Image 1 (tube, helix red, strand yellow):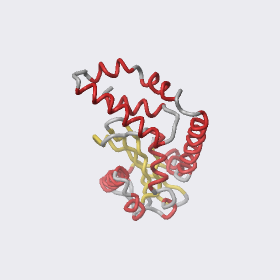
Image 2: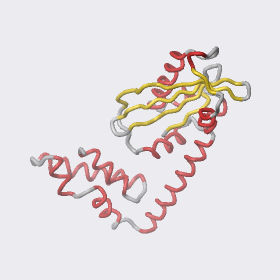
Image 3: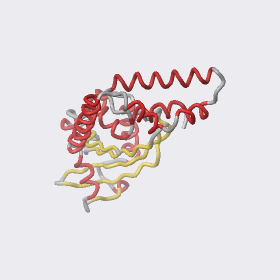
Image 4: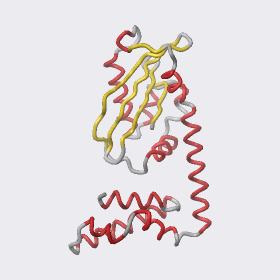
Length: 215
């Protein structure tokens, strides 16, 4: 674990608001950088500081009970909000499980290469927080969730710090038929510096984004 990962791990376990977390991260990083300038190695510094849990416990002892209670309440609300947002997209997961699936190569509606390109383009826009561009090529029902606020909460459920995207994995896709409508559903793992994320994207016959599920 490098210094930045350590600091992020500590901040994630401290039960406080965003502003205080930001100050804690700055404080810890400044302490580590000062010791490094004095000749200490990062791993030695982290070892002396203790585990992320131990360091976070020390900070938590100084945080007022009211602020910790508010933190827990906000965390619960964020989780519920993310669940509600994802519920709007559960059709993608349901379509994936339906027995009316077929090989994308046999489709009369979708081109495999085109779907793969659309998926990667959408993920690049997602990584750039360009939700305006994503909404331009999405069905109307997606507009209520493709925004900075909702997507930021969804991202945080995976990690506070994804890091830069490293590479795309293999794309798996299928065609799903439901109520005489056809959809292309693709799944891909994307590796970032600190996490690996699986995306499941759904497109309608007009190649508009009709579903986005992330885990």
